[in-house]
Amino acid sequence: MKRLAKWRLIPLFALLALVLSGCGKPFVSALSPAGEVADMQYDLMKLSTYVMVGVILIVMIIFVLIFVRFKRKDDRIPKQVEGSHKLEIIWTTIPILLLLILAVPTVAATFKLADVSPMDKKDSKALVINVRSHLYWWDFEYPGQKIVTSQELVVPTDEKVYFNLKSMDVKHSFWIPAVGGKLDTNTENINKFWLEFDDKRSNEAGNLFYGKCAELCGPSHALMDFKVKAMSRDKFDAWVTAMQDVKEPQKADTDLAAQGQEIFNQSCIGCHAVTPANKMPETARLAPNLTNFGDRSRVAGILDHNKEELKNWIQNPETYKPGNMMTGKYKELNDQELDAVAEYLMGLKVQE
Image (tube, rainbow, N blue to C red; front, side):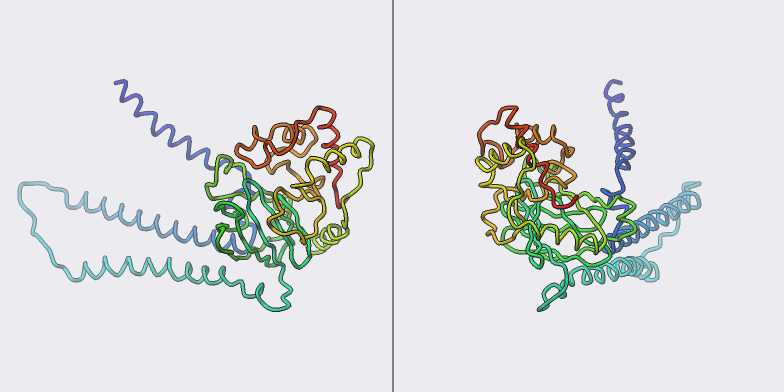
């Protein structure tokens, strides 16, 4: 009886898992598409679901009819029928038709999504972003605009954005659930694809989407997040101009921030850049670019963007992202030094 009671918990937990799977925000769900790629993938998901459910229903109906109509009523053995060419043709043709219904739109979508020819044209005006994945953060380079940022991807809406994906350490996977994807970032080759961010649905999501690493890469894989700010082309151009105007590290505007800048230049500048120029070699990008850190929405991609969480992260990053490459790379800071560094970093803004 005790074993039976334990087995009864299985359907309960299964039902609970099903209910919890529906929890979440629309801007982190692949079931709330916010772009052309996401729409195509969502349509394919619905098509395959309709086909599978239809097959299940037809099989169940046939099963019930046969069960009722041909229920054994006596000891007589019914007439044995075998080798029916008509039945064999039917149950061979139907699966072929179902496969064609699934295969044709899937193959067509695959070729359309794989078309990145505009980004490879000479003097192309397409927006191209080089995505570099690291343990456990993201680097975004805009070669046409000659700027680099990290942890927050900024894109224009209602136009195709092309991506070059590469990993700087181990295999990762670039995924923005509500917009489309995912695609691996490898160390040995560059993967290419494109996404489009719908302006109306971006506004409904607050112009902020969540990106994830979708390939198990280490102990902090689940914490390898980034944010996507989707905005109109005018606002995007204004952001690019503001980033390009930062020719040298911003000067601190308070005494406390000045103290923090001095500490930063002694301890952090060897890994973190505070200018957006993309002239530095990839091997020199040891840590996220902090040019516009004060404009961001998260600390380390996962913590609320405020001074307290920033100080917590600087003080002990291993607590928040085990296995990160920042732990142990600088001397321990006291409370006053932490306050000063946090004040300086929160003041690194390119737009008011």
